[in-house]
Image 1 (tube, helix red, strand yellow):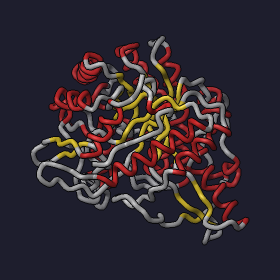
Image 2: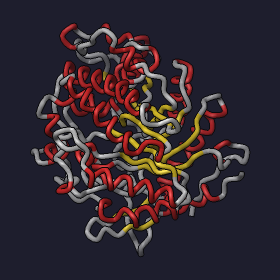
Image 3: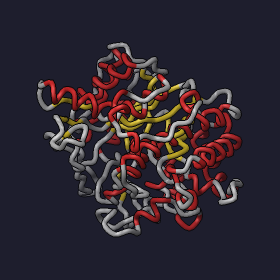
Image 4: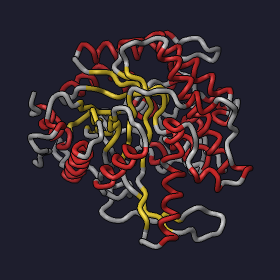
Length: 446
């Protein structure tokens, strides 16, 4: 079996560097009847939204099997577990706390603490309550304040029992995929919709940060963003300009406001009718001091000059080698983007909060030989090592994902887990990547 290896002097080879695994609520929990409906419940029922026509009603049955799953997490020797809280599970329509729902997460956190595992909590991983979407969702400025109330309620109960709170996971995905091009819930389209949703999510982050800080003195508070590094197709001036625009539009649009209190220059290329509704004082709220920033990385993309006059850039098909979901494997881009962000902004400590690959895993004789995933991890852990050596303050790394799960528009058809899930029996089986990850973590030096 392949191993994960890093230089002995690497910070990743020392026990003070944090290693974990990550999941999200809608992707694993199931338990649809013990919470309010969310936008993904509604989206999954629409035609031509989910490739295999599955949904998150059952998923991995984590709601029923959480203690077994905590034992699996502990067996991996990780330091931390990153998971999300389902807004529609812990809050009632009237804004009061659902005691059964919050009790589930309190028990989960207690179970992790008993096993010596730190809890990294994400408050929003895309499962907006449907009744809030019915009132406009992230297109409605009032949702900003509904989120702040939710963040306040959760933090009032969990307080210092967790290591870390992230307000949002990947604002780009919620805003761009969900409200601009419509391939994720709630399936709306339009540049104005996408930019408006993004602004309201960033604003909700700022108000959420303030709310959380009133209830915790020890826990770290920040946000998780996804980055897809952008490279020009050629060294022509036109391709370079288009790539800069793409980088600003899909990456820095969601990061620059957090640190610089403004949108990137590509904002000025949008028609007035496409720009978000910004009110006085918004950027001061968005620009809250953060204890950390989470970076999710999977792949890169290449760009060239637009083929049509009213577009900013042209995105190209991914280059080989590709994962099972069609994303290029290119670890160098992770180092590149970390250095780019470190040079562009005054970053707080960084955690790689998601990194992983969907592979065409097969369970044979109760084993999954996912050597391709081990190679993926090897390359990307080295990329993190190289970024640290170049001066980026990175404190931890979370493998995505703990186990196979509902992969959004791909349904159950793509497997990101280091643990194999048989969805018919719910039996979990450690893949070779889980064993390699566990061995590497166990062998770290003091």
